[in-house]
Image 1 (spheres, rainbow, N blue to C red):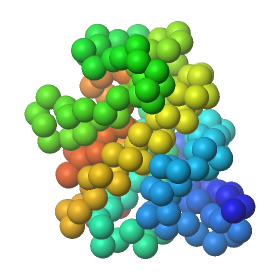
Image 2: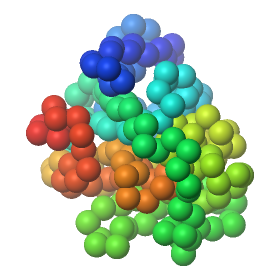
Image 3: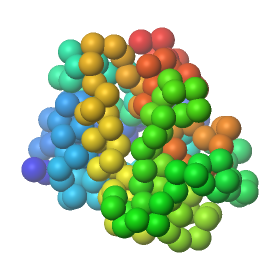
Image 4: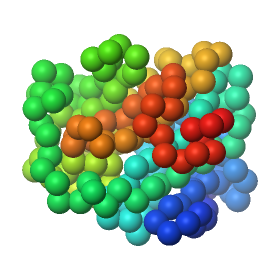
Length: 196
């Protein structure tokens, strides 16, 4: 496995990224499997995000179903300048945080309405590492970054069925990193993914 990535600038402060293996595009099903099973891939994936030129960003993927796992995996990073230097909100998800070392404190739970699954890291270092995805991949403990992608992969795998599933991070409401698994593109900004 020789994983690389290809980045395309879509507009000012908007980038699309594709994951490649020996130069060939990797499909969504394989990415989900690698998130679940490959520490090396999770480390590489985390590095791709950490190396983004954006100080803060939203991460959005196209919708996926059990029938479209063969679709080429890609994602966009959209500048989120309003996330920079804002106070973190460790209160909103505090009831779900854990000191248990299972999954390095990364937890998954339903949102208040029960229409989304959230994947959230419990605090393990200074709270500024948890304000948004860019801060997390650059500042959180590497073992927790690894667990975040592993848990996300497991949750996506579990949720897959014939209905579209949108996987993203938004963060405009709660200033604490949370990946979202939604049946509707609730907070999506990238129109091609939102309208797919």
